[in-house]
Image (cartoon, rainbow, N blue to C red; front, side):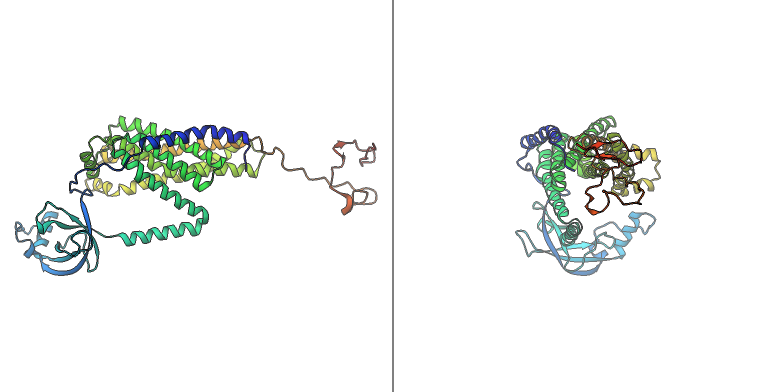
Length: 454
């Protein structure tokens, strides 16, 4: 349903300054790349090359673990069981050949214990860490397996499914996904590493992703613009609530090895701000879904019944939104719970109370992240529905009475139904019983209307 020029001007007056501010923010905060630093050799911060397993040989573990303290035979503890296996079990002696790097072709030995979570097989690709300061025989070690092919295959299946089902809209969605990932890796992450405020960077980056993704996928229309406004208002609410409760709950954002390494490498990064930035970016994808759905629902309701006013549209749209709220909030909570499942399992093993678990910073971060994002999602439904109802109802170009009442059948005269000058295919368009050229004439005593001669 097209909107009038007046409404387009009103929407543009709101969105054009916002888009201009996003462009200015991108220009001012745009980094020149991630700042250089000395590699620590810890975690992901180390040099890596590619390798391949070329040979595996079974050997007794006692031959390679001779320097360790002999086990006591006690298998009641995990440490005791591990010590017994290292003495009596069969280990694997894997020969690894480097397939990239300046020493391509060099081989080294990797010992795999029987209880190791990762076992190798011949011709398996591996990721090899390189420590230049270590002794010659210890410079290379396997840190992970090479998952490039299965990950690329899965991504190809995903892209194919999106294109087959979504067709042109699916292609545009994939392009928007690539652009979103580019903004994340080329702007948001390097800008935070350069010392910019994580909250400001996240707001600017999320706004750019929102504008590009929504308009690219759904077109430059008033309907999309209303969804953008609803998403923007909800993001502002999420930012305010997140900032308030992250500070109130004294959440530092430094809770695991990864965040600890980041803080060690870049002490100037505001880790609590980084946590808030994650909340905003994480909520954006679900917000887009809710706001677009609500806007489309209101537009379709108006198109189905153009006589509906803003209140009727809002009431009908909010009924659809309530069903959406129930499913989306549950999805968001389960997504965060699934990500934290190993952590929750540890608390269950320790038989900790619910209060103790919720009070720990690791879980409290996820609770705040989930609840703040869910509040923003819930608020986006009435906000977007109200905006859409107001915009589509205030449209000056919308027809007030598009449907013309059907003509009443001519009453039967003495000669039976269908007789008289109005009967037959050549009688012209049907008129009401007392209507002639826009003028109503009182009925004659006999019950039939007559035409007044000019």
